[in-house]
Amino acid sequence: MFTIKYRPKSLKDFVDQKEALAKFLEWYKNWKPGSKAALLYGKPGTGKTCLVEAFANDKNLELIQMNASDTRSKKQIEEVFGHASAVASFFKKGRIFLIDEVDGIAGREDAGGIQAIIEIIKKSKHPVVLTANDPYDPKLRVLREYCELIPFGDIPVWDIEKKLKEICEKEGIEYDKEVLNQLAKRSEGDLRAAINDLETIARGKKKITLKDLEVLGYRERERDMFEALKILFKTSSFTAARLSVANVDLEPENIMWWIEENIANEYEKPEEIARAYEALAKADLFRARIINRNYWKLMRYMNDLMTAGVSLAKDEMYRKFTKYQFPAKLRYLASSKEEREREKERLKKLSKLLNCSTKKIRTEFLPYFKVLEKDKNFQRFFESMTSE
Image (cartoon, rainbow, N blue to C red; front, side, top):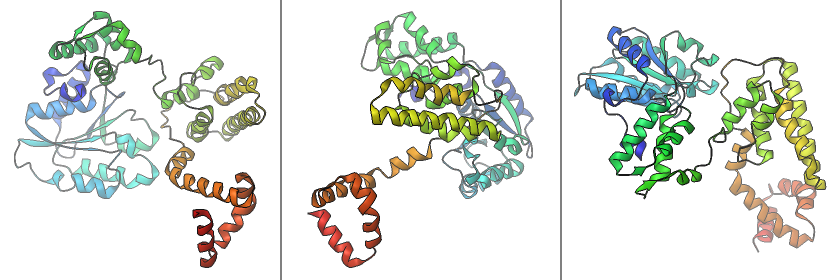
């Protein structure tokens, strides 16, 4: 992949972030055992991880790295860093530790993980660097006290365009200047996204033109349901709330599950939460009427209630960082898909045997079958009926 092939090997290859780089170098220069860790924060694709990797290469440091979203528990973190934090490197001049996406370790289920990182920062004989998208998550409050915060801004369009031009020239790809400019603008300051888009349209080609951009579609906030939620919950505009999910490629029912899951994450006042759930409940009523009666004209009311109705339930906009969650309902449906498919097949077979609908079997007969299944004789009989 281009993002790996053209990853900066040295700080001289690093794109922009001059202020962040200067602060990082000053922090490293003054670091000593017991000092604060460096917490690099900013949007994805702005170079936080690349900076540390390039710096380690330049200084001939052994980089010990982990992603906090994957390695979350106290035991896992101590296994990676515990011994290494107390001893010197055998093969290089020194060590530097990097813990990526530290905001991914902030859940209640990972409470010991944060404390384990704090202990490593306090006791380590080597510098510790953390990265996060937003360090002001309330769950990171204690950790912030042990960190020096270094912000990473959006990478300017000119710098992104320059990097894309460099890649094209090295790959032998002819390009229209406007193509690279459009890729840079659409990336919204995310260099990694721009490089990925370039690779998408350039693979297997000797020349790229404006027409090739059509395969990408427009980024305009359609990439991510998380972005849609951010707009919906943070805006005070009826129109902006309505349009927040306009380009999201999900069924309305699934969008409702996303909103339902995150209302309590965003709103703090009980009356706001109650108003938001009431609006969502009314939207669900309209959804049911649309399905049961085929009244598709009601769709606009459902959309208004589940977006603007929920958005305007708050008294004022919350300026905090909110980590939105994937819906538990959708996660359960995904994990139980195979089991539900098997259940569906059994219901179809029983429907033929009993000459009634699967709905009637599920509601009237299946509960009794499930009780009787505890009896081994009936279980064999039931399996023989549904396996034929």
